[in-house]
Length: 415
Ligand code: GAL
Image (cartoon, rainbow, N blue to C red; front, side, top):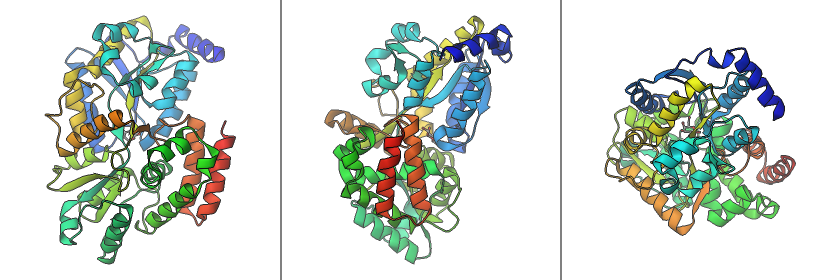
């Protein structure tokens, strides 16, 4: 840690830290590069530009953010930390521990963030009692998106149970359409896995296996069944799925080439960007079997320590992100829900209203859990161990038994 701080100090002594920065500019590293994502981010750019803060864009494509995190590390090591970085869960805490982040306590106190941001989010926005990140949104991963016209044409109702869901997809496949639009990338396989674990084992099992990393849960029959179900899904994707980006999989559902996509509610941003209306053109429902639970992730802008001349713009950005107006403008486009508990659902569409109601219910019933796939269940090393096994199983011929054994072992070795 000391070494990293030393390198940063050297970087700013050489003037590297301020190469890109003039007063009134924020340099922002993020992975919001799809149509819907870029449109949502545009809301932040224009809000800041209206306050005289210019935007230096540093996009690093790749859902889930692994590539963005690699770029970030090399930037910080060379003393060129961006002003703000899109970040999730345990990664934020890791950077907090490195001691290279900004202190947002002043603006947070002035604007009363403690009172309006749910505790589940504060857990990742603060390090050692200090606000280091500005939470932008709340997404959740246990969603399915369906093409309404195709489902009507095939006389398929929204499935309530896992078996109904599989039956529905078999019907779609038999009719010559793609049942499940999916992109074979590790983070997408893991995103599906989040929902399948919840649908198969319920909240207590999800917590035990993916948050407490309990060996008994990880090696249980329930986990074996989770992998059996992943294998069922593998039989319902098309042949071209390897490597496909998530938004191209969304496009298959939008265009009616595929019936369903199992993806976080950022997928809704793609439907909206294509001019589609929930309830009319597409349906949103919880991964069948996981109703009543919410597997969440929250994108936050982690703020890095910057030169004095860049601090003002950084604080303006933090303040803008938490403002009620921005929260509505951004989240209605992005597919997520606000991070503030004091915002009405009036401006949100049917899926957004459902997401907000589900979240309230999950907080009350204690069925809100962090997404493993998106860094809110366990630290990065565990997440990547899980990615490896889930994706090797999904893309290969590994049996459920082997997958269970490998998962439990590689999670144990990740510490
Ligand atoms: C997630 C992120 C979302 C969405 C998605 C795909 O990790 O939380 O905001 O953008 O990646 O890029």
